[in-house]
Length: 310
Image 1 (cartoon, rainbow, N blue to C red):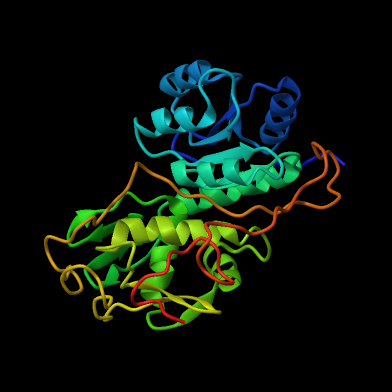
Image 2: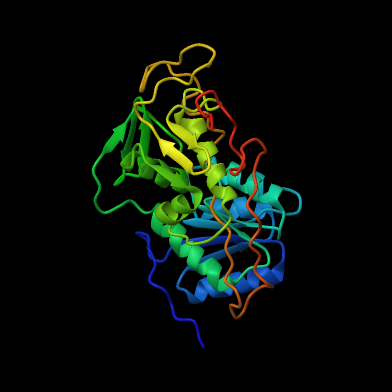
């Protein structure tokens, strides 16, 4: 069956432009073909320097980027492209290589797909990321604890200073601000915030950790985004400072907060989920097991702070 063009969020100049960066000519050709049939304008590059040249000549609306490139790897390419302005990135990572996935999330991938993968699933991921990257048609400014979100402008601030959030971090912060005082499991967050019914739960842990690094005064002892042992996370805009913290960092929205943004550039990520049995797959899809940093029973990846006791 021939693939029909999808309805997708366009840009002022027409169809969104996708830059596909992969040194495997078979993967690049198949992905390019699927995206082209879906109605996108597609540029290709097989290494980092060529990708940077293509991106400088025609600014892409989204980059599909292989992590393991010869010479300049995907992490460095992502950093350099993002250095010229925000652009969504979907990272292609090796099957079962957890370190690669986590690095992709840390450096700023808005989503990731593990190899081998279904090209049709990748097209859906592209559509989803582009849709989230577009400003909302309507949306009122709201916030708490010194944090403010403007959905229509996709802008978030802390004590008046704009935060460098990725798409997924922005969506996660918006969700927490809309649901203060409620505890959500990682499955709930994956479904309610990003619309996925299955995937690698460790990515939620990574997003929470990165968001804490930008909104908490002391990310090691989070006061706003708290861990609920055995459940997940809860946003507490009026929570007191974590007991045992070395010195007070001020109340909600206190000026002079330490480490407010804590960002090492833009970063984000997503969840891995395969399209089982999809025709035209580049191999069988893989769904890696959830994992993260050691330290939290039943919820990998979170550091145990003074306010986070079971």
